Length: 93
Image (cartoon, rainbow, N blue to C red):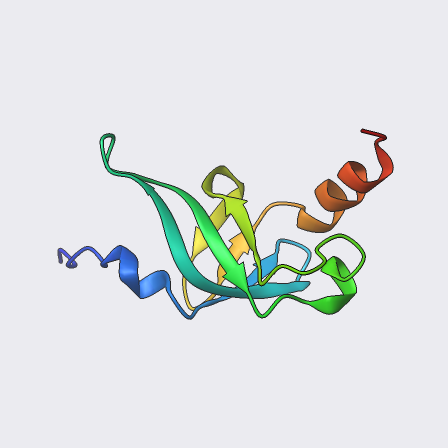
């Protein structure tokens, strides 16, 4: 039984969780590469303050690279967001 492919706009409004089950935020928009016809990233808002308050100041959200996405279903699962975020904060610029 062949299923119709989902439209990428169906991602908007889905909750985003790390693969460890930590709530990250909610998909508000998509970053697209129209020439290659691929999704480059997810614009995530309604961020989990425990993850982002120390890092994201004065911004409405973050863009999560689409390569971090592990699976899409009722929610979007992404790889190790907490560990990746902590590593970036600890590295001096």
